[in-house]
Image (cartoon, rainbow, N blue to C red; front, side, top):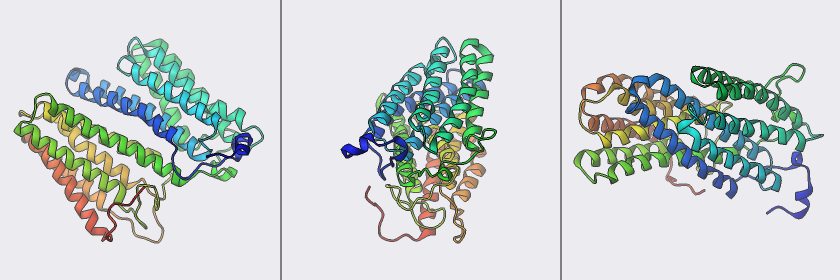
Length: 399
């Protein structure tokens, strides 16, 4: 708990705790709903709107990336400054409500709710750095917040323009706007005469332990989507032979994802659920994007197999079932910082290669066999990874 004097200390002097706060966990509740909405869009892309599959899939990727941008920047904010402060709690709660509005508008964001989606997104992404610019007056971190604000103000014009224009123009404007934000984040929001110095070079400390724990928590929320999709699909018709096989396969996939995420060692020490031992790479936030995206694809793929287990299988469903684990493995392989003294583990790259090589032949098999084989390959990668690192007896470290 904060001491009384710390409430009146400047935001720039506050430090993020090593562990995440309960308000941050509350914030993630909205993303349970948001991820379910995104999974529903992916399922619709595979079934209802197949004649416009590529454009619909592009829209889903755009929404997913935009929602991830909000979560990622919020996690960075709470890992840099103390989220127990009343002012930061207000920012987190306001962002939480805005994210809820975005999730509600997702199904019709390219329709009649486009303006609502765009305006809400802009308020969130501009409001956060605007608050920091005022709250960090006289602090070195203000310059970085000003750079972030400038980039998001530039993209906000395109977000609003897309919301107003509708049709093809909306997709073009929003894609460019999101690309601007991604480029800004990747290049640390450079500006003429202000450079592109990172937060750490400005004397601002980002708690790697706090950030790693937030990544772990968001991963677990995404992992629950596999259980939700598979469980809901089985619940309605009840247990059938095909549905039971697919349910077991989804469970094996969940356990494999969990083991590979928490126990894989890119190089150096093993990581634990609390983030201890994790040295996040510079591209860790993008790695998390791939990890969560891969899990959502896997969840939808297994759910679709349970709902319609009869052959022949569609090529797009094969791409989802095998592409999801591929995205996950690529993301996990780049999550941690590489060591200059320890050889990089290549187990996950071999796993990616195995999935890519096997996938084309899957169109010849029934859907249940495809789901089962994907789970078996994931389990094999997990066992191989376990043996490659020869871990000790500790297999379930505490938070």
